[in-house]
Structures are given as structure tokens and as C-alpha cells.
Length: 376
Image (tube, rainbow, N blue to C red; front, side, top):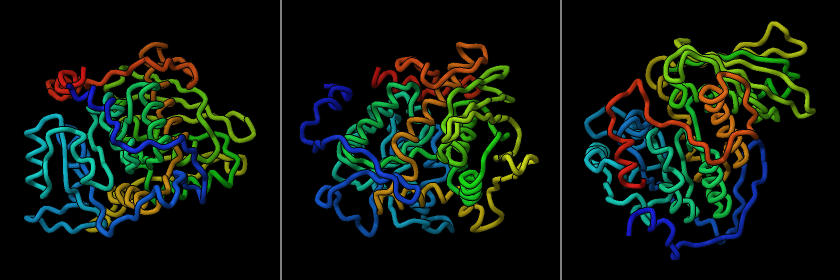
């Protein structure tokens, strides 16, 4: 029996009726009955998926959770990575040795051993609907790194699983979980926006260009300004510069437009124009200066948002908001690959149309072929 078959035969996992989301104080809460939601332990055991190639876990997140014993790092959370898995078993063992956890052979082997799951990689995103299925079915909180899924259909499958089994989801970008974005969101919620322009440092669309989209969703879109269409113009999708144009409708149905420039533009910046402030109000992101601000201003807030979600059951974004930003991501792909930069409505992206995964600017990485060999 292969691992794909294993996923569809887990009769031992609990099943639950479909659950909606309720909004409370700007956070989405997965509907849970008291007997369904177990008490959260003082130290949360975390399972780490996708810890090898192009992963945020070894790059940044793991050291915030499990400081290396030979470093001067300190723990920034009440969590502990206890188990890990990677499609490359050698890299999993290397990660386990460095961060003091146990490497497992099968991606679902952490079930029953962890309280929550963090997936840190990029190359796994076409298979996230398989990798996270057992953990979502078990009702565990899941952090799924960008870009979540490479098709609308897979994204819907992930979100339907989470909703059905009342599993909380976080699909983050470091650009979306910080005080600057909170300030921008507050400004948008109290203003009549007429447009905006933004910039983000980016190499290619799916790994770094998407940071800008996630940033804008937290600041603009989630404040009742859904994206209607996306156009993406660039020399190519894997080399800057590029320009994305987003058409929004506000809660009254009034349209407005915003632009996102991707390239060598620093970390991220956003200028919002309103009916009363035509010259715009600017918001700029920084990584913080010196210890500990270089960590607490930019990298740690994402992990803190996840821990808070695990402990409270409140999601920073609702299931529908997570789906919406994946639809916008896929519309951008469709625009540059199929429509020659013309606007693509979110509702017009076919559910089974898949975006590319391999990165021309990172040739020779074997991870994609390892996933294809394992899962097809």
C-alpha cells in the first residue's frame, strides 16, 4: 500500500460534521464543542513537515522554537518541535540532530505524538492536500507555509478538510504579522480607500512575490475589500521586476485599484490613498535593528500568531479569507501564463488548472522529483 492509499484509508481518525467559522474581534474561530477541543498542554508539541530544501523551518522558525544547544539563541515560544519529516530522509535526520527532535519515516507518523503541525517548505505545496490531510482530519492546528497549493481545487480540498474537522489553519507571510500591518488595517477600516500602491522585495512570483499579496490581503482585502481580478505583467514570472494590479470592491460594491511592484524594493512598503488623504499615508516594513528586535519585529510574530491560534482556537484569517488569497494568487498566475498580462477574475480560474512548481532560478534542486516519485 502506498502513502497515497494510506491517506484515504484512515478509518481510525475521528470524523465530525461540517463546521463554519464565526468572527470574533477580527479573528476567525473554528467552531468547537468543549468535549471536541482537548486542553492545550503547557508546552505544545509540534511536528515539523518539510524541513529540507527551501524551508522556513531551518532558515528561521526552528531556532525560535528549539534553540540549538551550541548557540546563544533563546526560546521565543511555549512550543517545542518534537518530531520532523521531510521527503529527503537524510535532510530530516540532519534537522533532527540539529534541533533535538525525532525524524519519522512516513509523513503521517507524527499522529498521536504532536499537538500541532508546522509545514515550512515551498516545493511541497502541490502535495499539501495529501501531507496535511491526516493532521487536519485529526483536528490538529496546522501552519501551512506559502504558497499553500498550486491549484484552486487543492486549496478548496485543504480548507474543506479543515472546516469539516474543525482544525484551525494559519497560512502566513512574515510581512502580514507585525504592527505595521495592524496599523494599515486599522487605517483602511476607518477610511474610504480610493487606491494604493505597494512594493515588495521579490525574486520570483510563487516564493517572494506572493509576500506582497499576503501583505495586502491582511491590510486591505480582509477589511471587507475583496479582490475581484488580478493582472500580472513582467518579463517573466521568475525574475524581477514585475507589476500586479488588483481590482477590489469595497463593502458597498464601489471599485478601486491597487498596484504591487515586485523587485529590488527593500522588504515591503504600502501607500494608501483615501477620499480625504489623496496624497496617501505610507506604511513601511522593517526587520528590526539589533537583538532582539531583529527577531521580534519580523520573524517571531508569525510563530506567535500560530501559538496563539493553538492555545485559543482563534484563526488570524477565516477559512474563506485563506481561500480568497489563494484564488488571487492563482489569478495572477493565470494572467501572466495564459492571458498575456490581462486581468483575470478570481471566479474564472479553473479549479483543476495547476501552476508551475520548479524554479528556473534554482536549477538542479531534486525535491520536486522526489515528491513526484513518491506521490505521482
